[in-house]
Each structure stands twice: as C-alpha cells, then as structure tokens.
Length: 480
Ligand SMILES: *[C@@H]1O[C@H](CO)[C@@H](O)[C@H](O)[C@H]1NC(C)=O
Ligand SMILES: *[C@@H]1O[C@H](CO)[C@@H](O)[C@H](O)[C@H]1NC(C)=O
Ligand SMILES: *[C@@H]1O[C@H](CO)[C@@H](O)[C@H](O)[C@H]1NC(C)=O
Ligand SMILES: *[C@@H]1O[C@H](CO)[C@@H](O)[C@H](O)[C@H]1NC(C)=O
Image 1 (spheres, rainbow, N blue to C red):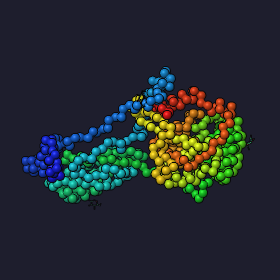
Image 2: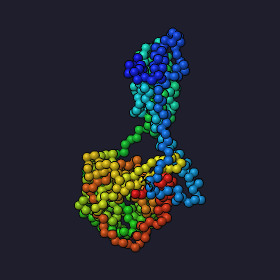
Image 3: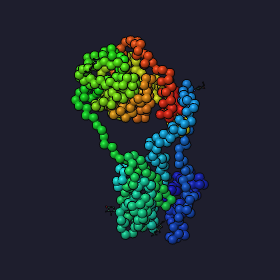
Image 4: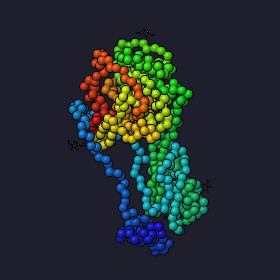
C-alpha cells in the first residue's frame, strides 16, 4: 500500500489519515462488493493535501531602475492613445507567435500509478509517432480503464486482442479497457499521436487518466529545420570577412585598409558607403557598396553583413587600425571552441567596453524595463579566463554571420546606435568579450562635415527612445 506507509501515518495530519483510509477502500475496490466499483465522483475528497497552483502569479509591472527614462513621456501626447493601441495589438501578435501551450506550468502528481514522458516527446506535424513510455502501474483490479486526451491531434492504438476494449481509436480521446494489466500496457505501448494541424513549432498537452489519477504531459509539434552549415575551408580567408561602414571618412578608411593588408593580405573586405560624394575604393578582395547618400549607420551595417558568405564576420569601424594584437585567428579559436557563442568582442586601443543588459518583461500593458549596465558582466567564459560573458560589446567583434543576419541592424537607427543591436538580440545572441585581442584606433581628426552628421541631433535621440517604446515594448530604459 504505497499511499499509507508507516512514515506517512506517523506524520499524518487528520486530512492525510482520511485520504489514506478512503484510498485504501478505494484502491481495493471493496466498498460494497465488486459491482459497486466506486466512481471518482464519490471520492473527490481524495485530493492531494496541497494542490500546486495552476498558474504562476503574473510577474506584474517591472520596476524602472533609478535614473531611467520613462518612454511614455517621449511619445507625442496627441498620438499616445493610438500608438499604445497599435503597440498592444502588435504585442498580442508577438505573444501568439512566441508562445504556445509548451510554456504551461505542469506538475507531476504524487503517488501516481501513471507513467508517461514528461519532457522531450517531439513529433513532426501530421506524422504518426508512438508515445514512448506510456504505462500503468496499478494494484490488482478486476478491470483497468485508462483514457488519453489531446486537443491538436488524434490518438490511435492497435486493434485490441480479446479481453480488451478500445474506444475512440483515431480520435482525440482514446479509452482503453482490459481485465489484464499486461494487455492494457501492451495497448498503451502502441499508442501513437498524429497532429492534425500543420505548425512549424507549437505543442499539445496530453491528459492521461486512470480512475481519479491524472497526469498531463507536453507534446512538442515541430517541423525539423535543416541545418545551414558553413564550410570553413582551410585558412582565415575562407573563414572570416571583414565588414565596415564608411561615411565621409576616406582618409581613415584608406589607413584601415592598408593596416588590414599588412596583416591579412587576401582577406575579403566589404565596405558599405553612404557618403554624399563618393570616391572609388578598389583593390583585390575589396567589395565597395555605394548606397544612397546618408542612408545611415545601421542600414550600412545591414548591407555589408548581407553580402558575407563566410561563417564569421569581423566588424570594424572605418577609423580603426589593425595591429599585432589584432589576431583574428585567436577570436576564431575561441568561437570554434565555444560553438554556442554568437559574438565575441575585443579591445579597442586599451579599452574593453562591454555591457550587460538587465531586462524584465513587466506588465503586458505597460511594457518592460531595460537597464544597460556599462562594464556589467556575468562571469568568465569557461576555459578562457581572459574572456567574459556579457550582453553587448564594442564595435570590434567577431560574430557568426547567420546570428548577426538573423537579428539584423534596424535601419531606422541612422546615427545614434550601437547597443540597440544587442538589445534586439538579447536572448538570441550569446555574447562574450576577450581582453587578449585588440584593434587600434586612429588618431581623432575632427572633420567638420563628418562631425556635423555624426553628432546625434536631439531629434535622433528622441526617435530612438520612441522606437524602444514601441518596437521593444519598453516602459523605461536606463543607460548606466
Ligand atoms: C533609488 O533611489 C531612491 C531615492 O533616491 C533610493 O531610496 C533607492 O534606494 C534607490 N534604489 C536603488 C535600487 O538604487
Ligand atoms: C470497467 O470499468 C469501467 C470504468 O470504471 C466501466 O465503465 C466498465 O463497464 C468496466 N468494464 C467491465 C467489463 O467491467
Ligand atoms: C502492439 O503492436 C505490436 C506490433 O504491431 C503487436 O504485435 C502487439 O500485439 C500490439 N499489442 C497489443 C496489446 O495490441
Ligand atoms: C570611379 O569608377 C568609375 C567606374 O570605373 C568611374 O566612372 C568614376 O569616374 C570613378 N570615380 C572617381 C571619383 O574616380
């Protein structure tokens, strides 16, 4: 008698004693002889002493860190109502795309005779798949009846042998009954699930029931994705493409290119250029893309990155300078050794800028709270004490091409942008920074024309904050 072992009885509360007595009578099925097989409704008292909550409490509004910018204040007052309505609609669509029943909170019931998979049961859409591990471990009965219920598919098992009955074969609710536990378990072992919907990634919840025991387990419905692999080739030139964006800074760009060639003779360099008056940049392994003038910083980054065919991108600014310490191979080595990494930053000059992002989703209506902590880091990269796991790095980084292309650089950000890429990529990019690889920075030449365009206008800062309000569904942001 599993339910009423000595330990339970010793520490039992009155409630537990009641439960044990009732379940003793119940499990032995001898309340008034074999015909009076008790229905669960007569035994609703036999509930676990403390029912776990069926939902986690909603996280509620997040708290804006001290010094945060309240983003509602940057939205023009006369547009606020409409804008919030549109944001709400987009957010609900985002939730529908990002969430599924797979995030439902599920509990394993105590003392359950039901056996079922609790994680990892994955099916392809509309493809029959055996449910592994289904079984019943019950005390002796005259008759065993179990049922399984799903909502986005159908269940089938084999046509039963004698001494067994199956109802709902090929439907969403399957009942199996037998006087032999062995036969019933044979039927359970043969149950398959077929989703009736095509979806690339969603889930179903299966309810498995025996008398008043119930277990719920998730079924992942997922269209497998073919991998997209890069052939690394044999040397650095087939592994990495250097990308940069230039705007009215040809002298600096030429110095950069010369320094690259000093260390990497044949590496591919991609330049996105939105200067007003363009110059020709030519040479072997140089791709110079001329954009409409003034398209902006992130638009240029996007263009450059879109043309890369190697596994890795090395991002540099047009006024950087390759030095002995600019060892791309070192960065590739770390990325190859830790394949979960997407972005690996280094030092610019003596500075190793990096940041951590603290983000809470907050309340559905209000939005989330973002806090960028300059020089915030999580911990050192296992095996690489000179590297740390962070959320964002400087403009000198090696990155997986596919990861960067997936996040993309929002072309709405024309001038004041950098951390925004890492904010958009938070939760999808694994970022680290290393102190043992560095690039130089050319001496600053103040260029009148350049500074005029590069310096953020106040309107740019405001439109960036407005973008965070809507696009990132933020309530407030703090730059620390
Ligand atoms: C924020 O500022 C308030 C008042 O200045 C202070 O009491 C509080 O401790 C600060 N909170 C944090 C997290 O720094
Ligand atoms: C077996 O039990 C189920 C439910 O407890 C009942 O509906 C069914 O009639 C029983 N079958 C037999 C053959 O006793
Ligand atoms: C389960 O399927 C196997 C293979 O089809 C079959 O041999 C076996 O009899 C089935 N079990 C039951 C209980 O129907
Ligand atoms: C750049 O190259 C194009 C095509 O070769 C040529 O027509 C143009 O005159 C060149 N521009 C400059 C500024 O040299």
